[in-house]
Image (cartoon, rainbow, N blue to C red; front, side, top):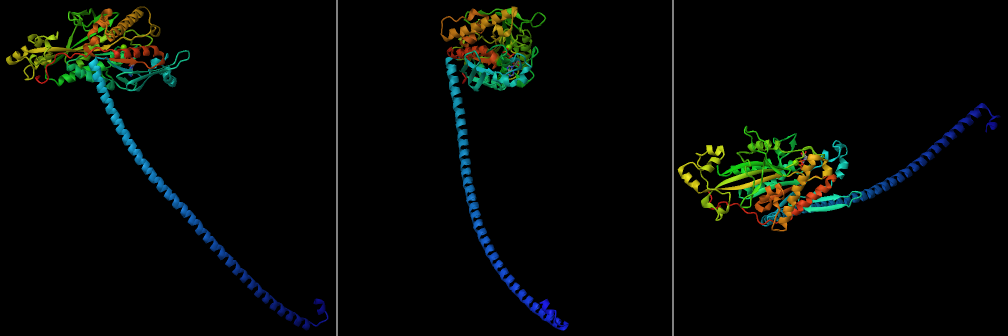
Length: 541
Ligand code: ADP
Ligand code: MG
């Protein structure tokens, strides 16, 4: 084109250029128009596909939300169903809980009924009641006491005696080189290591009511040294003294005395009084721990035990102190206990080497008119006269003028002529421990003591054996201990043996021996314990 222009004039060229420009303009506008059309078309298409895509998306979204809604609804329904099921389960659990409670209550009632029946049977047969107390593991159970806390875990595995319930003891032990033991023992009541002095006493208390109802009662702690006999009978020992201040730790003896005085306080004033004697049986000799010298100082005096013409055992010249309340009693007993022979053994630093017998004699003044038919049989009954009124405790004598007290006005004096005394006796016995010689590590005089202790305890077992077999001869006199306790053991008293057990494996032999003793004692039938001659209740006033 430019070559073609070479021979043309400027004008022509300009004209050509302008024509060419026009043409190009025209061409450009048609291209723009075309392009515009194409873009419009394309935009329409895109819009259309976008629209259909959005439509699809919204349909999809609807579909999905329907599915999700459905899922949510099913889940909600599921939860509702689960809720209902849960509520049903809860109701069922509540029902079960209630019926379990009912069954437990019924079981407790049945158990109480069974206990009461068993108690009646025990009364009728004159069985010896046996309770068993397993004390906690204590630092001195391990050879080196201080290791206990560090090695507590190991010590627990060394425990062999357990209270599986309140009537069963389980002894379970397997040691290399020894036959394994898995044996249960049944008793009237079994206390585990955590049961308090309160609980133990609660089971003993009913016997004290019987005491004031006219029965003799004897409570005796049996077990090896360190098994908790003195703790159970008296309470914890601090050095040489008993800590009678801490009420919750008091043992059976102080609590029983408090209870006796409480029961007496509910009776007419002056109708009861209490005397105490404290006796120790040491090396087969009897010592009166309340005997006083001329200056009034208490010192142990040797006494003897005799059999009276009526076949009862008696300790002539034994000191009986009248006490008016429990604190008088504790003061007196504490003084007597200072004299009790003790020697530390390897097992236990305050090991008692003697049997201790604390006796409370309760004299009841009753009107002769109201006596049962056979009151004359009662050997200890005497005519109540001035002599008796003199033996009333000071407080009662001072209260003579009160209308309820006896022996003051002539009319009352006349009444006293018909009055009788009935004595009932509460014997509380803390036996010396039956330990193996090897274990306690004693020699010399202490070894002699041990052999006396063991002999007296086997005499006790022999006596029980003879009674159990209803032999005509019961060897009470083989030992001072059995001679002294003859009446209580022989069936004159409701007798409770409190077996004390150390749960540690190293006392296994002793524990088995004690449990065997308790089991045999339980089987002894002594015939129904006789009630002392008390007034016929309807006439008594
Ligand atoms: P025992 O008179 O049988 O030789 P103790 O009554 O003197 O034995 O008891 C030995 C030790 O064990 C004492 O230190 C006592 O306080 C303690 N003990 C005994 N029984 C228990 C118990 N149930 N709870 C706590 N300590 C006890
Ligand atoms: Mg003791």
